[in-house]
Length: 251
Image (cartoon, rainbow, N blue to C red; front, side, top):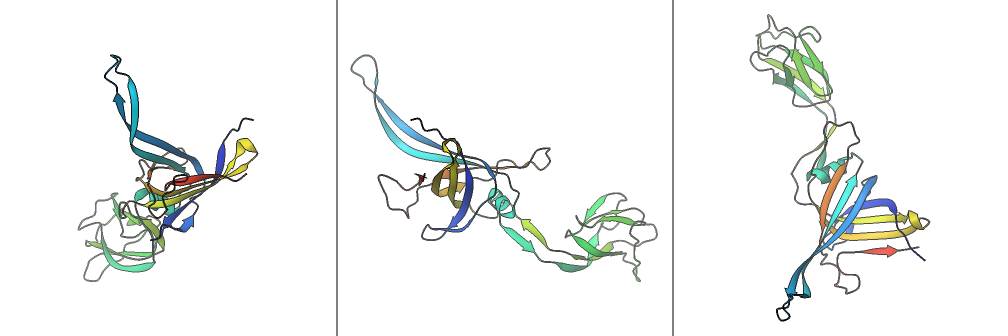
């Protein structure tokens, strides 16, 4: 009887502790594609006696494997993995007399505060007795992005100073972390065989940084990640199962 395969399932990614065991294991959400590609580099030998120069032996020089993973959910953890960054929460606070606009701001140019998610914004000038600018008359503000545009500054003394409160936000840096290694696990279903369960474990995957992130697009954003499968020295060398991973057909 023929056995066909078409997989779906939930993917889990975890960090590895000092003993090579998975920790902080979480699902990155919906994974549209997960592919494993194996490759060998071989040395070929050609005989030189028959006049045919026939290939008579091949020796494997190296073995390698790559992982391609397409994640669809725009979470902090996924973004940090893709950008070699760390997601951090910036706590709310207040700012007093932050300079904004330079000595003489240009009308209609956009100027940026040090923080987004702004509230209770007050803009004053630098006169001996500071005068307060009026929102909607002298300037406009996008409080979510923390941006100002001046409309009319006649009669005011520059530079201008902004005082405000700002709220909690989440931030992810770019290239702030070393190459990330993850344990990868697929708890899969073979939909071509009545949803028979299949377990895939890959012990060490070293991910490359994200090749492309569509910052403006008409499509759903995706994290298309590629990585290399590494040998896990914490696993005993096993001639049957090896040190890279395993595929378990459960039923």
